[in-house]
Length: 108
Length: 242
Image (cartoon, rainbow over all chains, first blue to last red; front, side, top):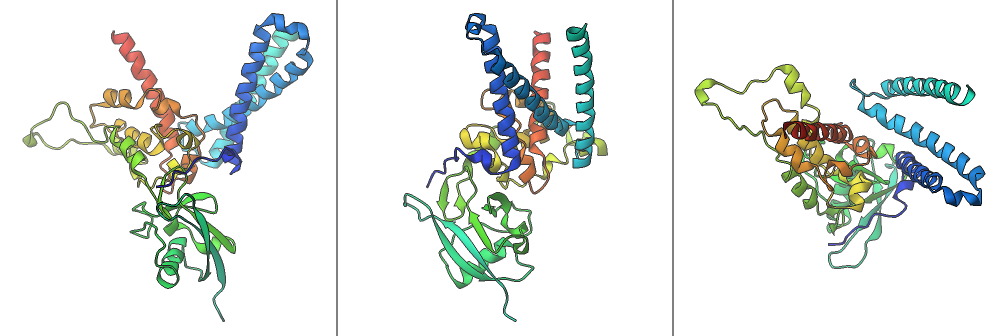
C-alpha cells in the first residue's frame, strides 16, 4: 500500500480551507501579541506601533471568521440564507457592544 | 455527429511501486454519463486493469468515493457534463492506496466500532411488555445522522484526520451522535466517555469541510460540536454527582 501524505499546502485547495487557515493563524498572532504585552520588560524595544495594529486586525479577522463558524450551530435549520441573517445579527450586536465599551472605557 | 470527447486523467498505482502516475484516456461521452460510467467504459474498452470500487451506482452504498478535480465525491453522483474537458480522477485523499483508485478505509471503520454503535439497553424488558416506542419527534432527532452511508468523503476532506489518523473523525462522531440522540439508548454517558479525550471529538477544530462534501447531508461538523457540548455537560454532571 502507498501512504498518501497530506500536502503542506492543503489549505490552498479551496476558499473554506483558506478561511479556516486565516482564522487559526489570526489566533496565533493574537496569542503572540498577548505574550508581548504580558512580558512588559520586552517593551523597552518600543515596537508597540507595529504590534497594536497587528493585534487589532488579527482580532477583527478572528472574530469575523469565528462568528461565521458559529452560525452553523444555530438551533434552526442552517440554510445559507439563515446563516447570513444570523451572521448579520451577530455582527450588529458585536458592533453595538464594541461602541458601548469604547464609549464607556475610552471616551469617558 | 460524433459524440464529444473528454480527457480523463486517472491517478494510477501499481502495488509495490514507490509512486503513483497519471494515465490519460480519451472518452466519447454523452450527457447522461457520470464519472462512474466513464470509468466503467474505460475499463471495458481500454484498460481492464483499472481498479476502482463501485456497487449500487445510485448514491446509496458509498463504495465509489474518489477525488474528482480536487473534490471528494461519489463517482456515480457526479455528472460528466458539469466537469471541464479535462477531468482528473484520483483516489480519496488521506487514505493509503491499495491499487489505482482503491483506498484502504479500514481505519475509520475501526474508529466507528469504538463509538459503541448500537442501541444499548441496560434494563431489558420482556417481549410481552411490547416494543420500545418512539414518538415521531424522538425519531426525527436521529434522522439526519442516521443517513450516513460510510462513504469516507468526510475523512478525505478533513485536514485534522489528514494530519493525525488517530482522530476519531467526522463519520464516527456522527454515528456516536446518532446513538446518543436515540431515546431508546441507555449508554449515553459511556459513549461520551469513549469519544472524548485527546483523539476524540475535542481534536476537531471545526473546519466544516466534512459537512460540505457529505453527499447525504449528515452534517457531521454540527454533530461533532454538539458532542463536545454533551461531553462537557456530562463531565459537569459527574463532578456534581461526585
